[in-house]
Length: 60
Image (cartoon, rainbow, N blue to C red):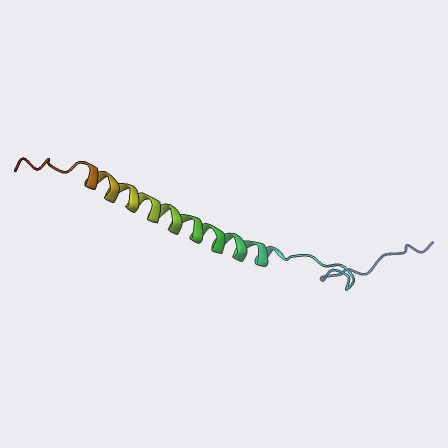
């Protein structure tokens, strides 16, 4: 009795389009860098706006 085994494939079949884990990790890294940069800018703008609104009144 002979067992029929399929050959081990390391790459997906050619007709199938998919992302590799490395591509997904790189995309997520770029995404999170952009998000943290935007959050940093928002935080800086809030600090600046707060400092402008807490100024001393002009009595003169």
